[in-house]
Length: 232
Ligand code: ADP
Ligand code: ADP
Image 1 (cartoon, rainbow, N blue to C red):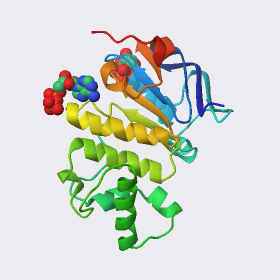
Image 2: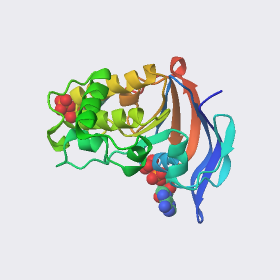
Image 3: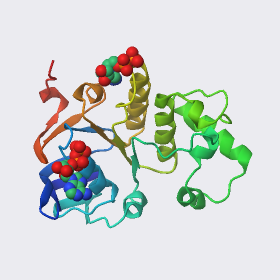
Image 4: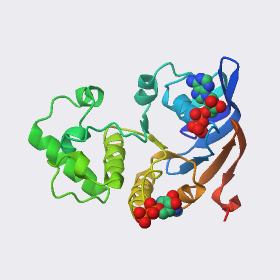
């Protein structure tokens, strides 16, 4: 069974139809890309999957069970983690502190001592291919791509099975995008299901397994990579 099945999901804000009849799925070890221009409904789609806004129509099925999220906490409890574009990091705090930021996951793992948290941060990042000399440096000194990777590594470490990435490469240059894409590929290879949301199909294409294009709140279909041709 897929990790997540999105079946004809719709979202209305009063009279405004932000999403209508949107279907796709998220599978372990695969990257589902959600593409669309400004206003297409990408943010709304993220909000529904992440539990921030409940859907109005259709079915959201997680691990074979229909869900209607009333809060991000409910999605997180099922292992659905969202990495937003404006990463929830505190620039002046050390990398390791940012890694363990958020009382929810920390409580779950009990109290850890500082040395152990630093070691864990370093080894978790290294396992994903980022070799940081110094996890004591403020996270603000890392490149945008590295910060994005730390946020992804954090979600993976704290038990995410589904990673929702909100425009992870939008603010980055080509080189930094490459760093993030390699990182996304590693998360996928570790068996996570990834939802890659972007306005630029070229950014998602290298790592994508299936592609869903949104246009004015409607899905233009859900296609495997073999059926996709990129615009020039
Ligand atoms: P995208 O992220 O692709 O730019 P959005 O999901 O933000 O698209 O927006 C899709 C549509 O839904 C737009 O027409 C937007 O104006 C509308 N919309 C989004 N959020 C709200 C809201 N909270 N209230 C009313 N309309 C909204
Ligand atoms: P750099 O600073 O590395 O030279 P830029 O910021 O100048 O990169 O980006 C050049 C162009 O490439 C931009 O239009 C950007 O949107 C695009 N771009 C960024 N990342 C990627 C990617 N992974 N694949 C394709 N195009 C990308």
